[in-house]
Image (cartoon, rainbow, N blue to C red):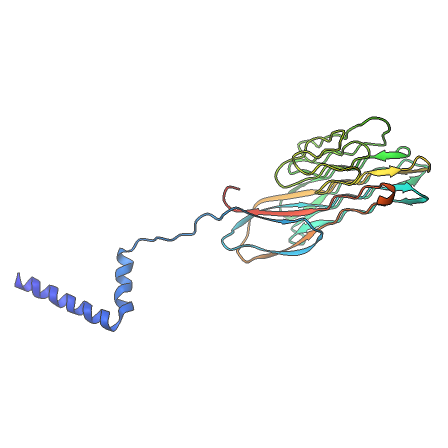
Length: 295
């Protein structure tokens, strides 16, 4: 018993010397033996970055984020217009992109004005890139006489946008719905429906409604994001003016990234239209980036 007591005393003495001379040496192994791991990298909270104003930006991956979902929507094309002694075709919608060439959504093509000839509506924007999948915007309504034509709907997250209504007089008429995709162009005289990042658009209504996937159009301007602008051809002129096409939409889900990694983001603008003579502006493009838990 005495030997055991002496052994314990010696061990305590050695421990005291170690602690007194080298506290870090003494405690680090001991703490490592008995302490449990109490910290870990838990799930990252949901986050979203919305780029909705035409410009060029830099997105930096937040701390802890290892994958992102990206939606890129091109701007809608502007509709043509004639009236007041002036005739003006619209302009193309601007392209939107993520990572320069990783994902590109083309803007809708412009609506043209032709003197005395039928004018085909602007084509919907297409997409390109090395990641993700994309769908095309709906074509703008074609002009077969003077009057108004609808803008094309922007592409949705799972399908193409709907075409705008051709030249139409009288009561309301609606464009064709996108197959599982973007909001359709609304009534002739209404811009195309927009697209978003959370749902597809419904078919257009007599009010040019964009549905749940994006905003509804208001009068002749294309709805955000990417709706094509409607056209107007004054009956007092011989120019037939067509609607602008909707913007393309490209999406990638759970794309692997590294915290601190940076990407160039470009948001395309909506196409120009001679609004003084009731041509519809194209809806601006957008880029949405989402990440985190529950997504």
